[in-house]
Amino acid sequence: MVNRKSVMRINLCESLRETMLKKPFEKITIKNICDEAGVIRATFYNHFDDKYDCLNAIVEMDMMDDFNENHDIDVNHIFKAIAENKAFYRIAYQVEGSISFKDMMIDNIALIIKEIFEQKRNNYLKNEFSDLFLARYYATLIELYVHEWIFSNDNLNFDRLKLLLSSSFFDFLK
Image (tube, rainbow, N blue to C red):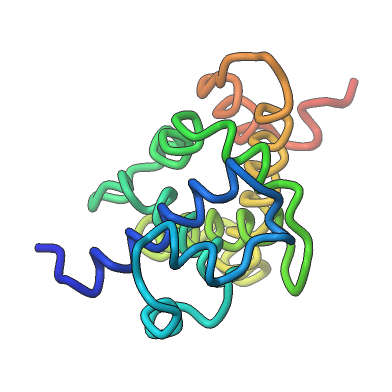
């Protein structure tokens, strides 16, 4: 069940998303977001520290929206909302600041992968590499693929990404 606070948080995120489609992120003010949402500034600050925090919440919301509770290793859920909001993500990738949008993407993808590792990881290299390290490693690869896809005219190809993720460095050498 979604409570009122969650509904307002989602409303503010969607307001930022809509506003970013109309004007550059660096020119967006908290007032712009609040006007789009039809709320006062204090409401925004009850949910977010700043517009970067709100932008990160959009990424988190999009990434976690369809993450299934069985934690199946399936990247499709990560890309569903991105594919539906490609124009927004193309704009968002231009955001730099206290944290870049690229870093937001990596951090959020890593959280999902870390959760999967915590549930399903075997002992292979467990003493050498922590779940968090491996999650960030694979999240960086996935983010690179997403970035390339966002700025290309290609269709998102989950099978191609899965093949890449299952490959090792040595698979590419003669």
